[in-house]
Image (cartoon, rainbow, N blue to C red; front, top):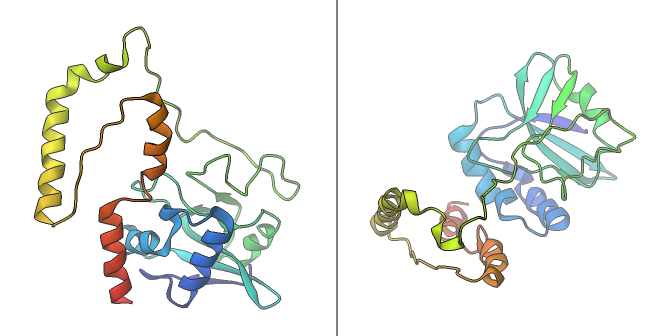
Length: 212
């Protein structure tokens, strides 16, 4: 790593490089976008976070946000509200240099909340000794009943939650719609849209842009 910097609630001069790497490495993953990361820093950071910057031939090619978890152990900044967090590196070859760049004595790096299909940290790395642990397991649903029966015991509670969500949207003047995917062929498209075309996120993005 070229340098390790103290971090406030924004990426500052590194915002443009952060978004460029997100586009190059993850095709613009919405939850890795600076407009999502910076509010997370603002509201959930502890003040101990560090921005790790790696450069090659004068061009930034790696960015990480780490926070100390205990003596000798550094973790990715991963608030519980974020189920996946960014590692803006092409691969793990530059990580060994990070141990000597971090403050104090560093023994271990924790890269939490990663998608095993996308993360640059692979189990067969020649650079690092890697231990993998499952973060979340797929929820199992018994298929003895039909699809419509799933969730029936909690319909009353589900209705309360739905009414509350629509109330918040109306209060904040968000455009809110209720879409139901009934066919299995519709599920993939619905999941892809989630997090990409959320009206509230688009509204927030405009607010952040105007602040900049």
